[in-house]
Image 1 (tube, one colour):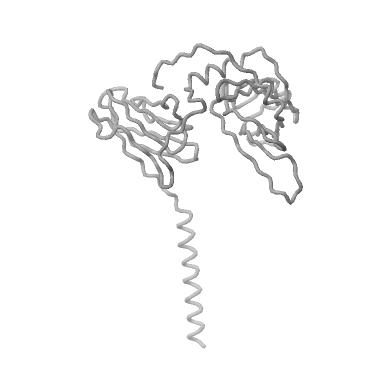
Image 2: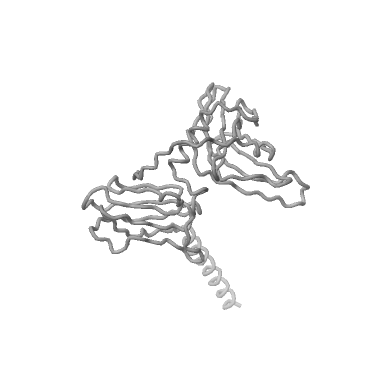
Length: 289
């Protein structure tokens, strides 16, 4: 009997030890090993990602970086000067992944084209909608922002916040949504999120609903705060779309550290009345940012 009890006690302590080890392994932060990249002054290095690039941070101004014209998932790199000290580069892609690089200068890089292809992902180029570059999107978004056209308005007012869609424009494969946020209260409104969905209309509780999130290509006059007793307008560029039957387009505005959340419900008859933007002169100069 004593041997059985001893075995039970020992087994209990081993179980606790195992839980402790598992907990430590779960809490242990995972490091992301940086990828080494060599760049030079006279040649361009191309990095191909499996998803569109949404953010780039350079550790030094010695590195020149830009997204390739017409390709949302290719980053082009050059050196701003000879023999700069080692630095780093961080790239965030639309699939939610953070990519880290250590950048060094080399007059003759051994590799000029780098594929960040992951397992089970095809190494293909993701074209921006309509294969437009950033200059084109910015130009047309600015035109839509200041256009005198007043289309069919969709608006909602709650908690002293007026949120409205007062213009839908289209050019090639992009739609430009002009939004206005007016704060009639004395408390500033800090924007946490601005999201876009195609959703099913209300159904019975037992019926599964589906939604498709639409990711903006560009936001012109992006704001993060609406002061009290003030108003701001912005334009959001998204891939063109229409809404199937029994669905609607939802635009959600969320307040940071607050509860003043507002949603606009846009019907298809409003979207199909989008106004075509005129052809504008675009500065296509190839520059590094």
